[in-house]
Amino acid sequence: MLQKNNAWMMAAAAMIGFAGCARQPVSKTTGQTYNDPKWGGFYNPKYKGQETGPGLVLVEGGSFTMGSTEFDLQHNNDNTERTVTVNSFYMDEAEISNQQYKDYVYWLGRTFVSYPEVYQKALPDSLCWRRQLGFNEPFVEYYFRHPSYKDYPVVGVSWKQASEFAQWRTDRVNEYILDREGIVLFKIETDAVDDNNFNTRAYLANQFDFVSKNKKSPLKDYSKKKNKDQRRQKAIMEDGILLPEYRLPTESEWEYASQNNIGEVNFTNIDQKKIYGWTDYTVRIKDQKENDRGKIRLNAMVGKGDMGGIAGGLNDAGFVPTTVYSYWPNSYGLYNMEGNVAEWTMDVYRPLSLEDFDEFMPFRGNVFKTLVLDQYGAIVDKDSLGRLTYRDVTEAENVNRRNYKKADNMGFKDELNYNSGEMTYDYGVTSLINNKARVYKGASWSDRLYYASPGTRRFLEENLSQSNLGFRCAMVRIGAPTGNAKKKYNRLPSSGIDKKTKQRK
Image (cartoon, rainbow, N blue to C red; front, side):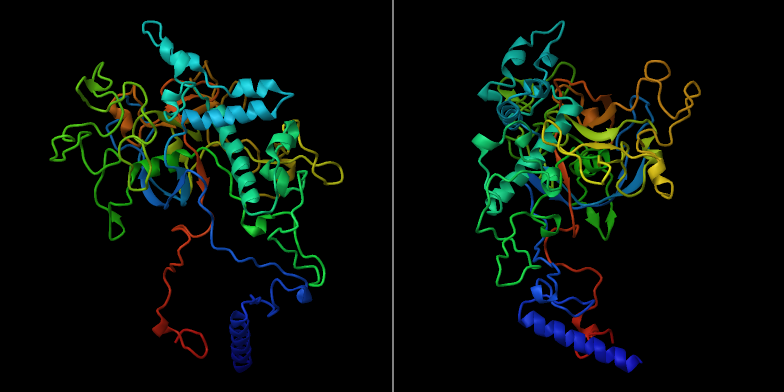
């Protein structure tokens, strides 16, 4: 029996080797060729790995100690240390700028002609600059619109607005990719109006009306015979062409990227406990060059009332936010993770989050949803903005499920509220937080250096905004954590493989 198995394995290996010479992939399950109408057209695309989206850099994941790296000055006890693991992900190399956000609101105004309120709701709150005992009116009028500030980080944006921006960005990037690859040719000026704008989820669910068909589409339908037209007009998930969704980073992702431990590893150990994202215990540069020595590494408040230094020798050259590419990037290539503006994360705030978190990809804020279907199981048509409609999952649907039951898991493991009988925070009565309180991280131009430490945490209601609070986007890394290089881990060297049987010696 063993000899027959070895014979079959050798025959399969020979078949695969022959197919490799012919550049036609073969199934290791059946021996039949992929992408061949003769065998039904089983699809196995040539895939080089996830494309890096515009503005993103890869942050290689790993385990790290999440929590306080600085003394807890406010005694909140909400950032106790805990070791967690973060999957590799992509993050914007810089904060979202005014120009990038203006691209967004311009598109909304041009597209949703019948719904002008969509444009109005997306505008930043310029009035967030006002102070009762300070003259900030110039920033109210000029900061968002004037070209002098176009490369400065957008502020006055709520968590909800930032999340909507990320969703919009996903669709525009995937729209561009399809057009670039010659799959769908879009006519932006005439076709992207109201609900007829491109939406990634609607496109994959066959709910998007094509603008035009391209007879030279590079996609093929291998289920058709070769003597017929094999051109496929629609990309599918299995092609790997469309990118995953842009989104806000989770708190753990943001803190991991800000700690910047990638250059501090020695034999799988991190030997130095850093307070900030750089290898030093001071925020001033110790370089021996006279022009740099003593300058500040980030845009934050150096001391009481000192926003930027003295004329002729400015420390950080920024009394308010500076351009998003100011100062030095960290080892991941990320700018201004410590200062300039604080940044929104996806997480709902809880004081004891670090005690409750999962060890892998920790996050609080899950609300599980499913598509709205009709009585026949078909997807209900798009809403007025061209998006698919979703609803919360029900407990009845999850009777046999063990990993979750309810849709809303924001308050999972909260203390019981005896007044309502539910596990929730009673905002304004027993607590200052609820499920709308979102975590934001990092220091800003108006913050003391204490908040530049990656472990510090603050929160704000998701519909509010501040003049010192901005955001950047993130995206999941699908596939190998180190990128698209063909590096293989924990594999035997060639000397450990029998060349005839292809098995271990």
